[in-house]
Amino acid sequence: MEALKEHTIAFSGLADGAHEFKFHLDPEFYTATGDEDLNGGQVTVDVKLEKSSTLLVADMHLKGTLALHCDRCDGPLDFPIDGKQQQIYRLTGEDEFEDDELVSLDSRAHSINLTHYIYECLRLALPIRHVHPAGQCDPEVEQVLNKLEVDHDPHPDPRWEVLKDLKDKQQ
Ligand SMILES: [Zn+2]
Image (cartoon, rainbow, N blue to C red; front, side):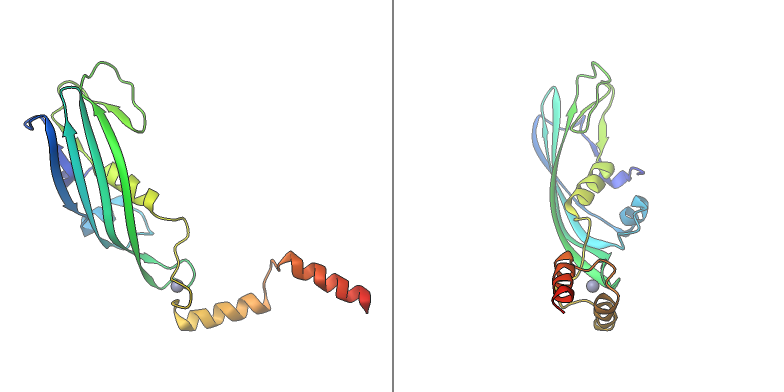
């Protein structure tokens, strides 16, 4: 996704050692992700950046609430998330080697941007299926869903099928 300038950290002027940054993910961020699951949220990103002469280690901690849609009733759902991710940058600029956790920065680089990694961390902290806690779905939809599940369950529990077979044989 597009890098947002507020997630850029200019490290060249920083002394070696630990530095802390804090971001609030704003509506612009959710729009930039292009992710239709995300309707917004109140999420804070705490970044601890450890700088040495050869490495930059960014520890990100995302915490807050995402505005999603429930996968069951499609109603609005405030979903708590808490995710951590570490990103390491090599400052030597010796080669182009790159993988998920270790990025080589060009020796002339003076800043890093965390937008992509923040989104990655957020996505990893989200379960594939997100639903309201039991009994908290939209009651109208719930009623319809329950009825559908009882009347037209396309995949009945196989154990019931076995019981039904047994019952049929006994008759
Ligand atoms: Zn729901």
